[in-house]
Image (cartoon, rainbow, N blue to C red; front, side):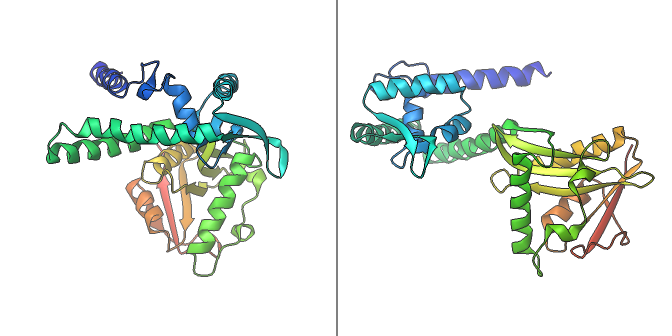
Length: 293
């Protein structure tokens, strides 16, 4: 651990929490703490499913229930069954809640302007640019990667999104059944399937096959557009390579379609070299390999 880097992060956290009033029990002078105001904001005029709020805000179910009860007690929120499915609990703003939401919206603008107003035009540009970069890097730090059964709902969600994207980008469309990979090939010890998540939302995946007496093979590497450009694909690739090496593979290979130019840049930057065709995948135009050490 680099002590100097840790100290910078802690100092930044203290400055931000003080400047935005996160420690104030009357956030934005509305007689409620930040957590309640943030929840009210996330429910919004359109309402929101309670399960989605829990995921979005990464809150413990019990704590979220207490926050909702407080807002209900103030007459700002009503929690009940969702439209079309009584099993789904939905939070909606009351008339008073919508009025409060509008007030919070205006005061949030005022708070943001109070941060920018004392600065010169150049300083404002520097601050907002730095804030955008910090937001992206913080999002990257929230991504976790771990093994997952390919039949798990998170894995299936990733694979559906993967198939939809390839179908839209490949000249001849894409049918996952035609790529010749079965779920049982991606379960230890035959292989491994990884899922990247933010809170509980799946935002990326990747797999490695470990056939006997052959190089390991990377398959199904995909990253959601919500976190693309944050290094998630490289982290997935590195973890798959690490697992292949630990399993005894001396090299790893993969194939890709000519339309996936960003994927080819990733592979080349990670040390992969183009090799002759090694399979009959109808969607592949390029084949890559890399020794594992």
